[in-house]
Image (tube, rainbow, N blue to C red):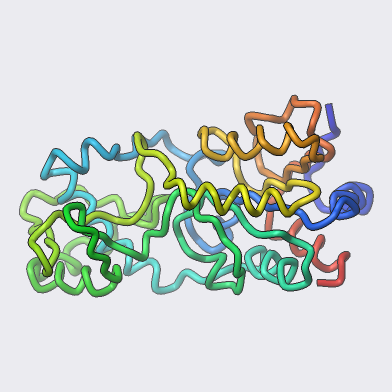
Length: 282
């Protein structure tokens, strides 16, 4: 079992650097990479229990759609101040230097791309896009929320103080009167272009994740407890190729005891990714 550390130090940084001796590294990121941008974590220390909305609930129950749209609208108010952090920027520099084969992220916040990362497999989709369930029309999140404002005057002012959730929405409770936007092209149901609990990752997205892994000589996990199956599929494929694996995370992960773990760091991703990029000259 690898030693756990709590702060950047030279010996542990050496072990991270050693991963890059095998060639470009594939990076898996989770919510912990975005906490320093002000987005709450799903399972971090002190995080209250949550019951995320399932695709069945969203698809079949109008009240859940009201809750989503109300939360999405207020969440956008919080998002105006959210920017990529130094960890996101360090990842972009590592990729630009040819040291990463790409980024495989569980996050739907789009912050890796905003920081400059180019090859990004968004396993759980991207919350900035809304799509029509019936006919696949796609719309920008901002324009659909503008339609929400027209249909729900005064909603923002009444709910502005609702707390941000890890999904980037807000915990809005009073949604009984919310008018849900529909697709202006066909009148169909609109939904975020994300993977809900109970759905599968699109085959094209997972194919990109596999391509990123195929171009790598090692794998690094940053800011994920690996508590859901999707990134575990990537981990299993890496182990089948005997790739060394490194982990940077606050709190335990689902694979800490696996023999494939070459380095396990207990700590925040922003500091460690920045230190890693600095050591590698990126």
